[in-house]
Length: 455
Ligand code: 4AD
Ligand code: MG
Image 1: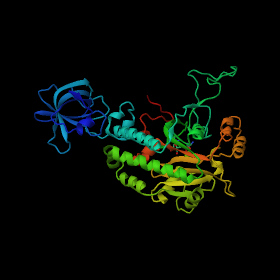
Image 2: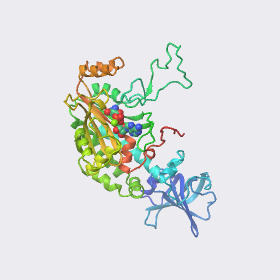
Image 3: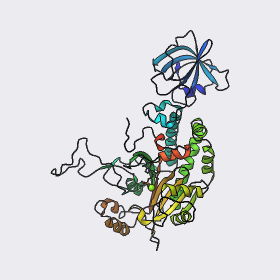
Image 4: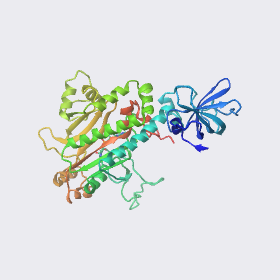
């Protein structure tokens, strides 16, 4: 008989056909003459109901065990499913001791609880839904860029630059490496090398040949933070676009990307998304619909500061012009804008990395940088126009003692330089935002953060 994925069996019209499924038992219900099983193979949230007559050997069928079942697919008398499988042969491929298995039948375990079992949590409904949504969102993001004429670039994981200049780098050397000062060349790559914090600079190189490029891969930051929105390893979607002279163009791409990806996920993973919107963060669907329906807001940093200052809320951090916006400020601003995402543009020049384009305004000196703030999360995207004017760039790099390290970067401004800009979107924060996930650790298959690198 034909091997079929559970998702395909559930939507099959071929009742009466003989099929074979392989998966894991999600529930066992003994009744008078039959044993009812739910079997899931990860292809859908909904399991396939299997009816096993007491004639079959059902002794080792427990919650969590792996099974290989052949039988006949029939129309189900029960309204909750279209079809069910009448088993002719059941083989327990891998037993599962229900006493030792950390998840219990019929219990809904909290996300915090299942997080303790990174090697097993994909067996729970919520986390398997999360991972299917994550996979589908990845595809949607790739399609968005492909459909809009971008070339995908695999930017390097190991790099010798610190794009953000925030000193949150993980250094890379062979295991057992000691920094022997007598060694004339103590580094494996002969220079200090790091795990990338952003693929931006490499994308800027490529935008100078392909006009519009993107990358979607892991990035690393040694943030000493146990916050619910920071990881040490996270995925970032980054785009870089040549011949861009205004932040409006970048903001349009960010908003379109957000909305297209979300529409796709809502329609292609309806069951999985519903689990989050119904049981984990009730009412969140309305929030998502609102974000999709409304045009995102745009305010300047200076306006943001005015809003914060004139509010009655007591903030922990300063709200003077020149201060970086903290999570509490970001949350307030999003609420102030009616819980619709808001772009904050034109930040103080001194707050932004060397690459951000100088607005050359006085007296409040700003750079053409933009952050997208979203409900529940705060900062989702960060981007800017890049300084394409060689002299201004040289001065800024020289001021930071970086002129030698970024010779190649300045050279890009000599050979066919064009105005350009780009942004990065944190992928796990995106998932938090659309699903209403409180903790970013539940948005990635294997979470890495300070003091924790399980598996
Ligand atoms: O704002 P960031 O630091 O911007 C850049 O790295 C730019 N070079 C991107 C670019 O213009 N190509 O990071 C971009 C986004 C943030 O807005 C946030 O969503 C996410 O990456 N992010 C993190 N997500 C999880 N854990 C962390 N530690 C993160 N740090 C940043
Ligand atoms: Mg940022």
